[in-house]
Length: 441
Image (cartoon, rainbow, N blue to C red; front, top):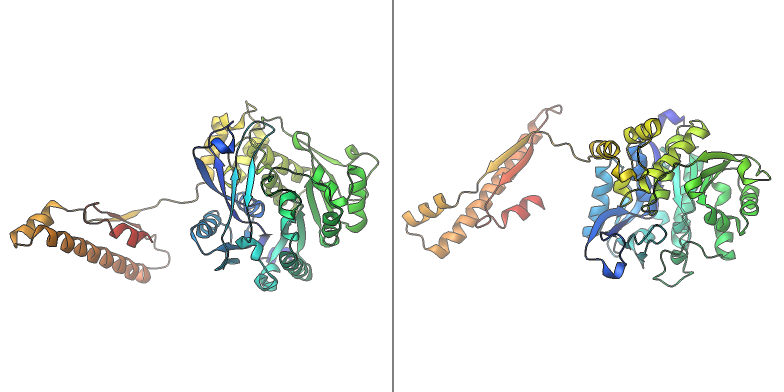
């Protein structure tokens, strides 16, 4: 299959969660009084980032049959991500994460992922034809930590390679999710483990792109020495290796590992204030994939990645902080007058204007918030106050149902190219209290 014939550019497989971000910056998680709710999970964040950068992205995961699961699915869909392979698990809950921003070096993180929905992903969830319809498949290291999800990832990888698609691995090493730390130590990023290294190395030969921080390269290569780890990865994989180096940017190795890390292909970082490291790696991955999937020059691809990471590291949240293609290009061309990018008025305006997930077109609104008129009518016909309350409420439910059916019928009969107005209602709280929930689901 030629690349131009592919239905999708990218399928992201693995974690999908709800992130609850503490809003009191500088405080302990124990002291948080309010939280902002965002879409979360590294592959889900990357899917959103890739979609905003113009890639046709899809998500392969599971969510719970509950409110959070619907939130995850709807959030992905609103960003243009294909959710046809987001399965609903009737027995598991959607994963939940609590996060905070204490200072530039401390980011409290607590995962609630015990028996969560996305870890229920199995081989049965992998449709080889769907996987083969994409240019690339992105795996997350977390989903290699469990035998069932490992097998699912392996199945998807084999389907991708059989169809001529490429496979990328975000090492995404979270020791707590491999059972190497106490459950409350989610922010701990590195614990050496020969078992984890050996397990990851089973997958590395199948990967065309391997991405990680310096510590993640250590765990994948099974050595605390970066050059030794890189050489071990190269022994088992011919894929492009990209090592993230924080403020210094990144370095890539397409062939043999040189004598010095600096002799790789360097992608310089951008001088920005570090506000929130959580999600910056996912943004980096989205930018990298934008260039890699489209076979753009490596230097340009690394520039996309570093710029996306720099933008998101300066913001609150992960998925909602991802830059759009217009935003990324503006930053690459013009930079910013401040290292505190969230205070760059032009960049923030571009972000808000280019990442809106809903187009508000014409509205067709039915107003039936009448109260006094209906009460007067009931009194005129001798209906008691108690009875009139029930009758007026029932009447409003009839009006709402008639409006719903009428809208559906008109929509069905309208020409395909008709810009049909978005329906709306104006209803009072006294007699219409039960109407709004019925109409909004």
